[in-house]
Length: 239
Image (cartoon, rainbow, N blue to C red; front, side, top):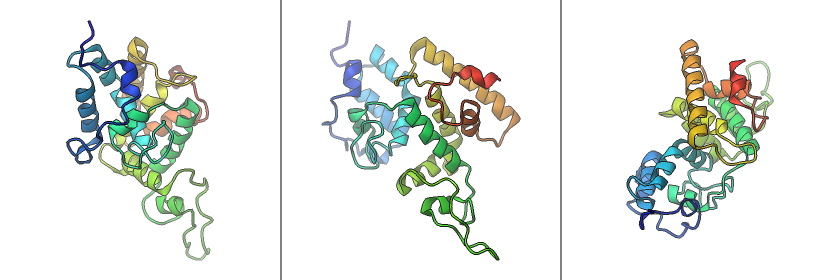
């Protein structure tokens, strides 16, 4: 029997934009802590809804990151300011299409492997879109692939997926989000989602074992279409 304090699955993803987004001073907590606070407030202990929400923790947090921490773009239906709360994110959440996600992940993959500093091909050149001086050769032509996201997003993604604490885990999390995407939008969940996540984790362990310093996100994107195919099966990674 449903618990009277438990939200329905629909309620978890819509109609909560009016709640107080600064409760407990949310900005003082990590994204994972914000997620747990949201789950605790919106679902009952031991309920089906809480278990379902926790089962989606990784892909939801990845979309929270990609949306600029709850705002900054309408990418997932969020319309709040850049750096908004997890509750704000869930209040406007509509999801994104696989094509959109893979295109963005491809750009994040490039950001995650750019060298530090101001030289040609570096992150600063990408960020500014301006070529850097090259001794004896004038100025480099600028980034080979123009930036398609804002400087604020690029800086945030650089921290999350390249230089910050947990960057390696976030790259795996983003690959997992891509793997769980349904061709027409939405995520695979339940037994299917768990099985796909298990396959991806096995592939990750095998890859890291052979490439300790490698970039699994870029490997995943390359092996499944370089970020252009919205519904490539995980089985292609066995090739």
